[in-house]
Image (tube, rainbow, N blue to C red; front, side):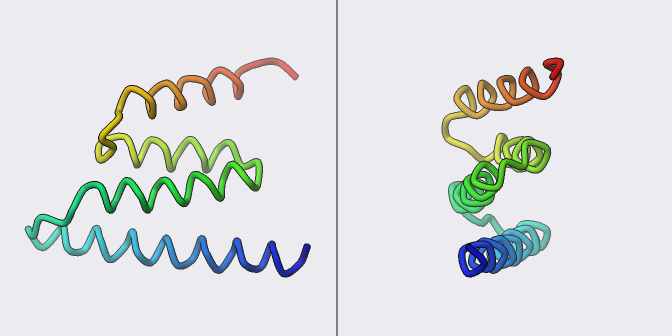
Length: 89
């Protein structure tokens, strides 16, 4: 289990670095592929879900929304997570 958790941390760090690089390219006025950004956010969301981190999952899906080719599906996922987070426990 430790190795798996370690791998997830490493993966998250690599995806965060990739996202940071993507944003720097975008900030320079270049036109990076928006689908690449959506894929990076998608991998981060997959890790969030695996780690049961609803708050970070919500943030990553919200970040993904403007770049996703399927904004309706992403918005539905965001709405579901928000509904789950507001349910009394």
